[in-house]
Image 1 (cartoon, rainbow, N blue to C red):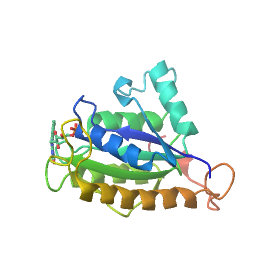
Image 2: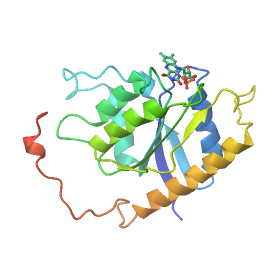
Image 3: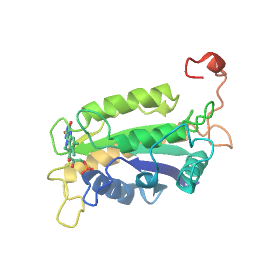
Image 4: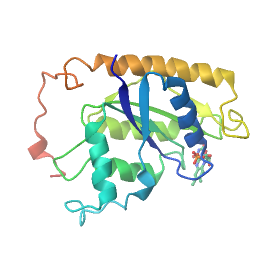
Length: 204
Ligand SMILES: Cc1cc2nc3c(=O)[nH]c(=O)nc-3n(C[C@H](O)[C@H](O)[C@H](O)COP(=O)(O)O)c2cc1C
């Protein structure tokens, strides 16, 4: 079976990020069948239309990563009941310059950890709204909200066995979702409904 390539965007960029630990745990669990690449979104400049047609290398290599990946994975913290700006900034870069939208039709899943019990419900809700608008193919279930305050040990390793099982269950569904999109050699579903009306978009 060919390896599943998944570009992963983690919205926590601090050194001790609990979402980075979640990424590492997920990667360890799925590593035998999938290649999870971490996108370096912290190096992207703030999006501006002044530079969208001639962006720096950090942007062009990020955009190439999106072009080449089979699937996309978002692991997000929650900032003030929404997603962190660094993540939204990266999403915006992948959606431009108009009418380019590199995210379109890619299979995608979202998970996230915070230090609270309803961890990342608000963040993922907003994130999913954006991904739907960008016409990504979103895995709706299972939802995955993690209280990461006690799940990881001193060395950042996952120590909570229930969380491990939840990651495994999520991966089972995500893998199946990605494989469902492998209906031709390009790795994407052949959609019979053509996108239309983009020229009339109010954002053109
Ligand atoms: C600016 C800011 C806003 C936050 N807002 C929320 C929030 O709305 N809900 C929540 O559960 N945690 C919130 N937190 C706490 C985060 O869950 C916690 O800092 C978590 O560790 C962030 O993820 P990270 O470690 O991967 O960066 C906030 C933290 C910051 C710095």
